Length: 63
Image (tube, rainbow, N blue to C red; front, top):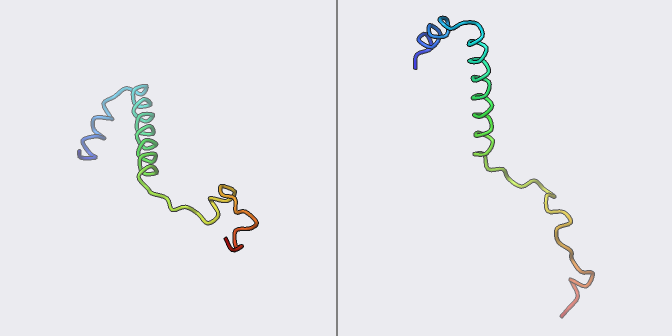
């Protein structure tokens, strides 16, 4: 949609409705940020599995 068309429609609204439009735009911007964060696959950081596994003291001993 053209920005000028949106702006012309926004100009015709009363002030209290312009505030609602601004709130809705903020809501949509936050929603887009959350969607972008969930789409990014993060790589595990070094040491993120610390204390998840326990190595026994005799691990290197012959069987």
